[in-house]
Length: 382
Image 1 (cartoon, rainbow, N blue to C red):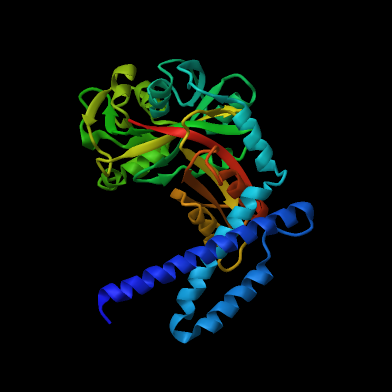
Image 2 (cartoon, rainbow, N blue to C red; image 1 turned 90 degrees about the horizontal axis):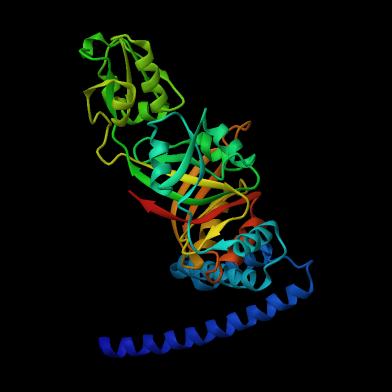
């Protein structure tokens, strides 16, 4: 048999498969309607799905069993996603999405009162300036204070660093994002440059103490490891570190911070570009209180705790994949008070108005041990 003839037969089989697939999905719509009338029937029936997959594997035989199992598992995921989109039960996430869409705004504000951790010269302050050119920045003592300022209504927005391209996640911030009624409305990525700040006429050998933030210390770990007999003392921000070094009036005390802090606090740049990598980007989140949502959002963040069972994470990711949604971030986060139990922070490229997204979120809330929709927003770069 020649290749054109083989391809002709394959095209014919594909056409039959497509017809059968559309027939199956039409029946799935009927199944969804039946379940809509009878809430006692669950969206997900794991026993039936296992029976189907077992039957498929056995019927396909040893040679094609694994491939057939994968094919039908994906088809079951698509079927379940379609059911979820039609059912959309009255869940917490459905109510939150409805509230966010009801408060959707076309234009992101250029001004407002913004809570930022640290003091003048902090990288978070630079992120606030990037997002709010006409904003009024209020500096706070630590990340929890930023969240509390937003929750209490002292500030309309808050800026929190969530991850760095070199040193990874800011774990404390992930825990704070679980605070009730907090929503991510924007994010921005900034290129971070670290310098070593000292008193004038200081030599590297004079330094015995360096103030900095723990994230900055991690981002400059190669430089720090090359020093001898130097204590690194953590501060709430790199700008606060520069402030403390300036107030010490001591050549043995230095700070790792941004170069903008040199002029602000009367320090000298002894060494510049001391971060481990040149592409040292930090991502900052902008949070607010309540269900807010701005037009054009293309990044959706969720925090989930899936069951501790084989395939649970895969099944969750398969639901996302079945809708053709790109997952751009997956971060495991230890759950405080447990031994090796984790939540997962996910960023998805989608919009709440996109077909199938609400059904997906409702299904994830139904199937996960805990589920939080953190926000749907746009990310700026630079």
